[in-house]
Length: 609
Ligand SMILES: Cc1cc2nc3c(=O)[nH]c(=O)nc-3n(C[C@H](O)[C@H](O)[C@H](O)COP(=O)(O)OP(=O)(O)OC[C@H]3O[C@@H](n4cnc5c(N)ncnc54)[C@H](O)[C@@H]3O)c2cc1C
Ligand SMILES: *[C@@H]1O[C@H](CO)[C@@H](O)[C@H](O)[C@H]1NC(C)=O
Ligand SMILES: CC(=O)N[C@H]1CO[C@H](CO)[C@@H](O)[C@@H]1O
Image 1 (cartoon, helix red, strand yellow):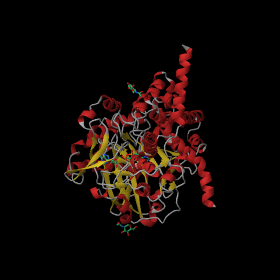
Image 2: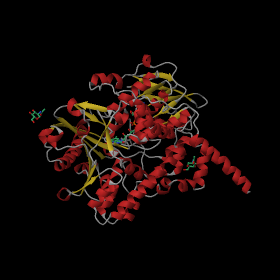
Image 3: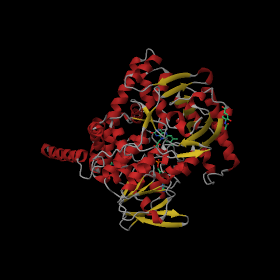
Image 4: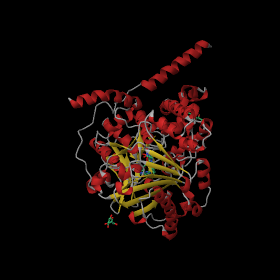
């Protein structure tokens, strides 16, 4: 009996090692690909030559090795990884420009970001930064935010408490302790738990890479929770953990405010996800120099250099399958016509709902394995974005390279539950949670590009149902009722903004408009206006889900990448690309990125010589 158990264990361990350390395919991070900084391009027309290459059958390269659906960082990132090992990849984007949540748009001379406000973990020598430098050939640069990078404001206007959030492994707790004397123990314990939990996230990637029988073994035996504190903490809610640490309601809110970056109430949020966000910004927060369109702008040429292309206005309306249920291509809608494109591998960055519910033929969608995956996920919350163009420099308007998280009270669970339970007109009268950022102040190239002007970006949540009535209307013409509802939300947000930023007055506002969940559906193809894709509730962190929703779909030649396959956020979607690339290239790219960081010092020395 014991002999048998030992043999089985030994075989399993060998398998694990093979998958953890095995590297059989080519390594996209083998060479240092950073090139000397090229002259920056600010001219929109010039940039659009890269970002807005419209779909034409004649622009589709021949002998493609892969097709990627969706040009978000999850899709483009994967395309870059494949291009770096010489593969010819076609990226297809339904919108009129590339980038997904990283695209920007311009109105009345103001350029606005859609979904990038701040990204953490970008210290020079760290794996994430080294990897990104390689994925943009050293052309994308990052500008640090102020320290404090976030400000948490709690309470009604007449009694707003302000808590600055600093980065830095020692500064973060130190500054919090200054705000909350007597809570030193709670603060240290919070940070200790966050770090320990985050350190176990490696197993999440492994569950998506190991063979299914091994993941089943790890899950059934409970080894998952033993091996990784991440999965041990995953079933615990943020409220649960935080309430055990302190009785101070303001501190509880400050511990929890960053739930806004993944869209949950603290009660529904998993402490595991929370630990990732807290530690993500511990070394600081950064913004892409030149705005978030720079991300796609510097990735696309790498895809093209390998013979691939990134084409927009290319809505994929279905994935093509042969009788053996193997994907062999996609169909793109060009007007009324279908254009069929073939490739031996199809990767979807379009999100799990779009991919399985819209792009598969009915009989494949009905497969138990597909239905199982769909039953494990729900749509995330809808987002509301308000874009403001202001007349005045950052100095004149009192704006800095930082963010504000403004909550009307310190019980975040109650605040969000109340808001979500309201009818739309009622909800629009008071927005109890508002994120305010000033992208123009974060970008050192802004002043040169738009002298004397500033932008402000506001984000909150909004239920899809509040705006669903207008989902089928044309994006530019949804009628007066829609406009009126939007205006109500805008007015309530403005009230908060003008109170917190007294130098912003109505006469300074040159442009203001709001994007609702139905706007998200149009521009980033979020089926229910989701701000962060699939919901990040506690259920998302069951090891079973993690093991089941993986790059390899139940259908041959069809893969998933991006935020729905891993986690939301720029870093989460890129981790999706890295995990997907690991499966396709048959090597652990997470480890390659770490090895790259170790070699980076050597690279840097070579560069200087
Ligand atoms: C308002 C907002 C603020 C945010 N702020 C931050 C932040 O400060 N920091 C941070 O790290 N993250 C932030 N995020 C989250 C982050 O931007 C996303 O998690 C990440 O960029 C998602 O990348 P993705 O590639 O998975 O998906 P996406 O960027 O959504 O890309 C998917 C793409 O697929 C396309 N597509 C879908 N269906 C089809 C089809 N049938 N045919 C062709 N194309 C299709 C879509 O048009 C889209 O371009 C924010 C998001 C939003 C919305
Ligand atoms: C911007 O403000 C300046 C004064 O500060 C004013 O001269 C100018 O007309 C304003 N521009 C617009 C477009 O309102
Ligand atoms: C690979 C794996 O562990 N799959 C499991 C996913 O979870 C469902 C139930 O939620 C199980 O039935 C699968 O075996």
